[in-house]
Amino acid sequence: MKRETFNAKNAPQPRGGYSQAVKLENFEKLLLVSGQVPMTSDDVLPDGFEAQARQVWLNVDAQLKAAGMGKADIVKVTTYLADRHHVMANREIRNEYLGSLAPAMTVVIAGIFDSSWLLEVEVVAAQ
Image (cartoon, rainbow, N blue to C red; front, side, top):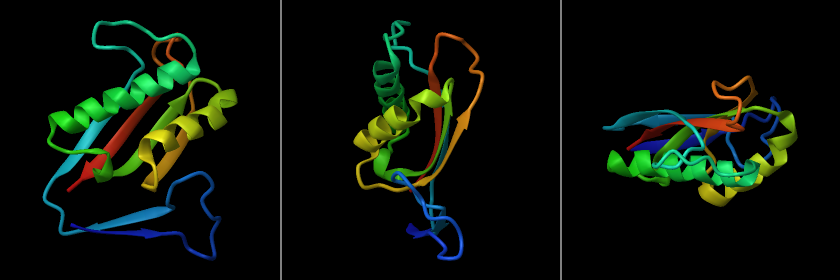
């Protein structure tokens, strides 16, 4: 698969570990991961935003692995936050997980299905 990222000079530059656009060519697998919520496999909700965010990324990672993929295959991330006050903590924890990977990304402040969930994350991955 060929992957190329773009950050057009005549448009706003990304802030916080993402690319404005990602172009894929010659990929064989495309995985669409539904919004992952901050629950453990035994239905425990961690306390606080940081713990919930780390759990969400553990859940994303589990879905990728189940499909024979890994975080390096992520090309798009959409994050739904229950409160804009979590933006910086979200960025920090997301960057812990993604490292130098800079997929296309959107962050939305939204009312989330369960009011005790502070975020939900969906990804698109390709190989």
